[in-house]
Length: 195
Image (cartoon, rainbow, N blue to C red; front, side):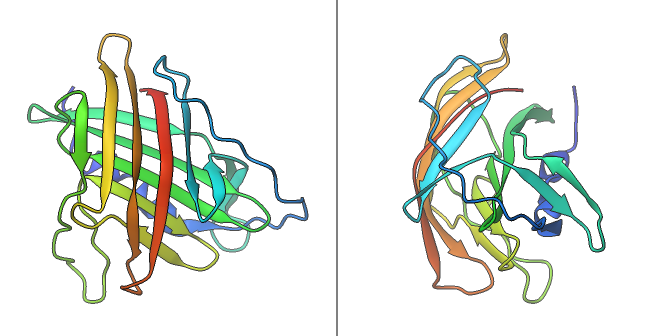
């Protein structure tokens, strides 16, 4: 199936639209999923001494645009014979409204993939991210953290195109795109998805 390479970035505009839904619930105690490779549809990591997993309901738009469950989404697509992988998920709690994305622009199989150099931004003051790497947005604070060249590492431990399973781990340091010099560190990242 031939698809445009830009299809995989379809979730990017949605990252900027996420806004916090009003909630009075206490902050949940989230737990990292186990490291597996069986298509369990899990994703998680540690950031700022807390656990991040897809959780809650994400909301978008001004004046009640709508809400949706923060489900993990995976897409493995092929364009001109080159496979790419994109994962996206959201976290919505009383204190956090975040979206996460992982992308590998040229998927060759199992192995280590380092974040690439970001392309030049097409807009003055715009934020560019490499085609391979990680991204985290914080909707309430309007922050966008992105991988820079060699700053994040994704290790694929299983790529099964018959059972449609991709599993791996990730880690690294992301820089705030609008405030250069501000960083976050992601540790113990893992995912096990079907696409």
